[in-house]
Image (cartoon, rainbow, N blue to C red; front, side, top):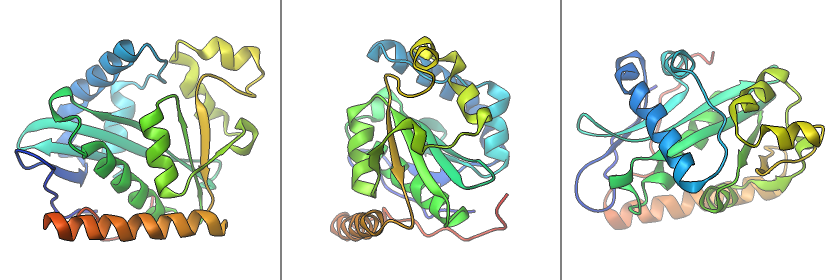
Amino acid sequence: MKMKKEKEMGGGDVEVMVADESHEKYVDTILETIEAAAKVRGTGIAKRSREYVAQKMREGKVIVALAGDEFAGFSYIESWGNKQYVATSGLIVADKFRNRGLARQIKHAAFQLARLRWPKAKLFSLTSGSAVMKMNTELGYFPVTFADLTDDEAFWRGCNGCVNHDVLTRTQRRYCICTAMLFDPEDARCLLLEKLCNTFAKKDARKRKTDLSPKMKEKTPA
């Protein structure tokens, strides 16, 4: 899949795109940026290996933002429970590119990619960050209990590296520090908010003479 180029607000052009194997050189920087941000915020994070992220790039499941050859931001998607659920995870923006609207662009792009590849799947997010919760709400996510999320054990094993994993295990996976949010394509409320978000994104794009709603050419889903 290819995305149209986007210009990030404020100095310098930033391209937001679907990553491929040519972007594997950024994996170490991505992992270091995520870990550093988690330490600053004092929050937990599900750790991913270098090979895991590189594999997602090869599968076309990563959104990456670059300013020329400089890493600017990242997120990835993955399907769980026989593709009935899709998670958008790992949203991060490098320090020098923050507070310019780039996180919202990446989040929107990851959401669009997930909706394109798995249009019937429920999208979910686990986050302890208020900014991500706000972006999720704009896209049509609603807070839910952990029981409403996938029961795919492969997904939950990804939480093993989080500093708050003991909370998750002590509560028999009923709750943790993170808030669970869900976008259900069969819920009219979710679809209405998704439509409104796309409308506002297009208006904002016209105002800034950029396209924040990149059109992606579909390829056969993995």
